[in-house]
Length: 172
Image (cartoon, rainbow, N blue to C red):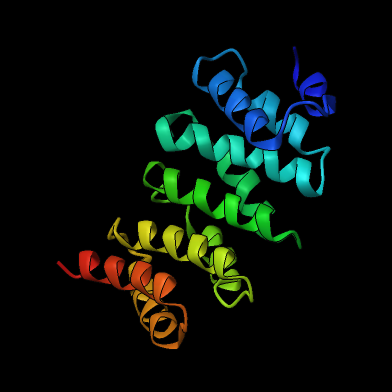
């Protein structure tokens, strides 16, 4: 079964599709660039499913991500679909440590999502920004005060905790 067949099979639930694609990525059955090429043609729920599969795989094996993955999910942060935003942020959080010198545009896109009305988008954004902050790169001179401000303004305890935990680790 290929990606097109999997996505068109309505008998397979989205979570099962995510797992199957993620396992294909992890086993090298599906090259990452093929998933990205496929995902570029998708919108909404299908795009979110593809990125969620990428998140599944990068959470277990971050090294499968290359610069094209980082670019793809950074661009996806600007879409209107909340699930695409949060799954993209989670991928970034998983792989940021592989790209410490290529995070400037990523940080800008994440910061633009930090005030999103959706709690899950803000939580995933806080996770990604926190992972970047913990890298202790030159970006921290800008990121540290931004995260301090975000944590002070955040109303959701779970999101605020993500920021505060990262701040604590970055200041050690």
